[in-house]
Image (tube, rainbow over all chains, first blue to last red; front, top):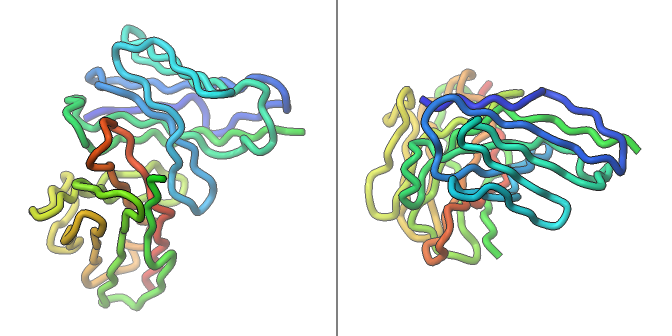
Amino acid sequence: SQKIEQNSEALNIQEGKTATLTCNYTNYSPAYLQWYRQDPGRGPVFLLLIRENEKEKRKERLKVTFDTTLKQSLFHITASQPADSATYLCALDVRGSGGGADGLTFGKGTHLIIQP
Amino acid sequence: GAVVSQHPSWVICKSGTSVKIECRSLDFQATTMFWYRQFPKQSLMLMATSNEGSKATYEQGVEKDKFLINHASLTLSTLTVTSAHPEDSSFYICSAVPRDYYTDTQYFGPGTRLTVL
């Protein structure tokens, strides 16, 4: 089964700096990789999806890279703000088939704290 | 758009009773919905895949007779925890994939906190 590791349980960043979170997977190459934000006691909120044939994707202050050789994705938040403080989850399709709706395997998440 | 709701948001029940959790897609139709469980400081774990009009598919280690899933319409899936025990206490989250969108994105509900006494 797929194993996902996210770089650290907690990450403290000063406001205005770029936060970089890492997601590594160990088994089969997924058809796509997703990043979610989760606030305490809430369900995950979708942020970005990147496919296996894409190297980079951006959305406002967010940027995701995907390196299938390293089996790694990096998630960047530029010009970070205290409101960005949350847990960020990396998720892959469970069976790597990419054939439409498939359940997700999640990492444990990185708790990001942006200090003013 | 793409809003998913869950009801109730939290529930406390006695050991041995059954609890039903509803998951609704409010502004889209979803052929497929998923049920996840999250224990404190743990990742979300996929429990089952729910397809409208057919039997749910359960992940390895999840008891289908204990976690009953019914996906009766394109906007509603229910999860019933039967004969709940304290070890079933967890955060249950559903997600849905819009039927008409070309996307692999899942939209998650706000979650239901189940506490079994």
